[in-house]
Length: 448
Image (cartoon, rainbow, N blue to C red; front, side, top):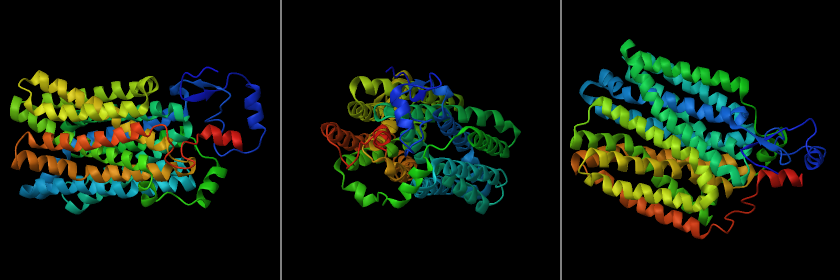
């Protein structure tokens, strides 16, 4: 049987004999229109998976539209206290994301992915609308970022949706495409925000609200549920994975350590890299915008290639290589004597993040039973969000109070630990870390 994508395609009104026997066997835990082992796969752009990826893409555009203008919002309401208010706005956003990633993941196991994704988009739209009128109220400003932070907790649900819709051997590609969507949104958002800025400080927030509302409308029309009623009822009866249960699984523990460190390193990028470029090479705002676009393009290229590379050399090995690239890039970039070397090493770090950031959740998913996908991925995203809270603050403090090189050297030292954790996973790649971890959706369909 030929497999050239992520989802099955109906090649005729009947399909092959194995598919007919599966469909006649009674209800299955996962819908056959989203995963049917007997059919060939369709192209991504025709699939519900594309809608889920597009949801992540538009979410990140909205984030990118807002983030360059938060310092100005903070300055308007706080004056000289603007930097402290900005730190609080960044922290409260990631704290909300931290708390609600796990809640949304667990909830999506019980009631389905679709309603949780739609609800999160409503919250994101509300947050952006409140931000557009928050130029004179610190209370409204924080309320806006709280709502947006809660809405951003849907990434774990999107990853669980991908896990529902892909076979284990194809999951690395699916998670890599989430990383690519992440990268495109990260690059496009600031450009759109810059185009809207001449219309006033409220314009970027209104633009982000329109994007989130459009995202909600498209998801309402085109995003089907990935879990059947039987699956949701079964998940509701099952005991869900708790953090301590997950921490007892050696491979999952190592993966979560690596994910926390990569998330911390990623969150420091918007502070440390531009600050170094300004300090050493005199970069101007336009050049910094181009750097962020460059980072986004690197994310797209390597995120899209991650699945193919994983099939060729193995997901565990690829994650280790990505972590090593981040470590080496962070270690060397402070010593770059010319801006071209800085740009090259920035690309090395961006490529490492583009590989490791989505593929670590892929490995977590492959080691997790189907009924715990949302819960476990929610815990992973919560820990990642928690790591992203101090990242920008620590990077800024080290850069200002210690030395321009210090945030990069500290990041490289932490990534050495993360690299070691990925080597643990690589050595244990032949074992199953959870029973019945590694069970594929396909195997459950066949047994029912």
